[in-house]
Length: 142
Image 1 (cartoon, one colour):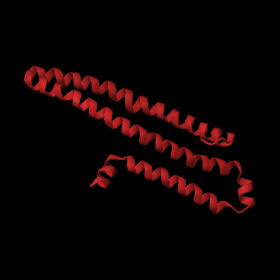
Image 2 (cartoon, one colour):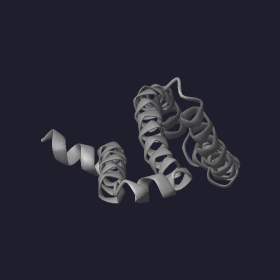
Image 3 (cartoon, rainbow, N blue to C red):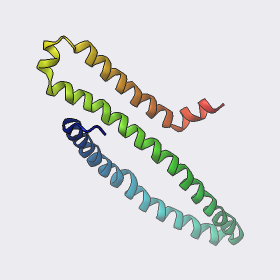
Image 4 (cartoon, rainbow, N blue to C red):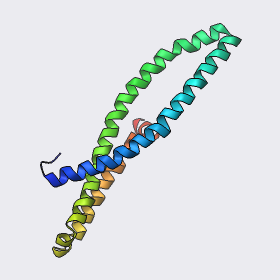
């Protein structure tokens, strides 16, 4: 983060807006599906054990492997998500800086430069988001 107070304020505004959406997303896309998945898993274990106990034991023995794999990939994805958030914050900061100093930008004829700066920062965020998608990353590996 820069030491300029304006940039810190703009970054804080972006983070507040972003975090409010993230909290909403957490509840609607995280908590509710988690509860639903828990009951689905419990039901599947119950019925599988009722049909064939050895099959249920094999299925449950795989669960720790899946748990550790998900933890490994979660760490990698969390780092990518933070980078994407930083890049998007940077792009929004450009917009807010230009809007705050619109008269100065127009007076010095810097619209083109500011537009190019915004497009560049936005493109970095889009590229980072595309790199973080599973389908895109598997295509680039091989």
